[in-house]
Length: 226
Image (cartoon, rainbow, N blue to C red; front, side, top):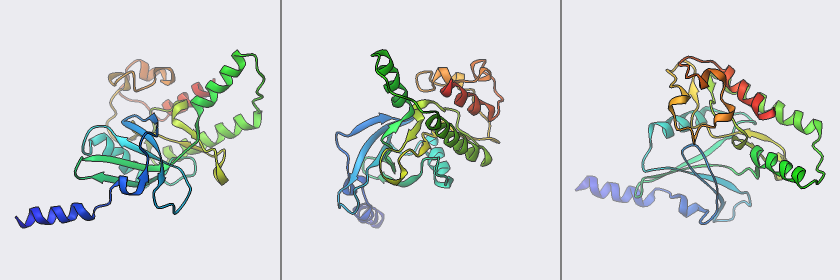
């Protein structure tokens, strides 16, 4: 009985994401293991926009635990930063809080393809492409230096900040499939092909190799800029 009362009081003082952020009806995308919402603080302490990623299902799966554990250790300007984790002990929902990025590389590429198809002229400056590539390579070099393979690099996982002093800053996101080098790696060919993007896989992954290296991430970056 004492334990039940203690848990009840503990649940009352635990902070819920709904108490701090407005995000209803603001779904902006999906990650590997959940939906992403645009959010703002309810107390108005800042005017920044945030991204809230709701992990699918209830409770903390092994994949979610792995992603959170990796994100909490990573600190680099070109890798997405995990600001906070919310766990609702009533609904058992898990939320991850990040800075909001106005664009991703997939939407930028789509915009330029559409304007080209409509015979409109939108110039793509060489320095802009160089900046994007340099920042992506800098971020992935940091991950590899920390013995992490991303394994799902694609335009939708390359975020580009659109407002404020961070405008134009690139951030590698969605580490749902990331793994440490020394851990046994499951072939991506065995995973859901709808989730893992086919077009950016290295040949060894297409062939179902059970042993591969950080070269798979470099191949994916090459495909992005091809």
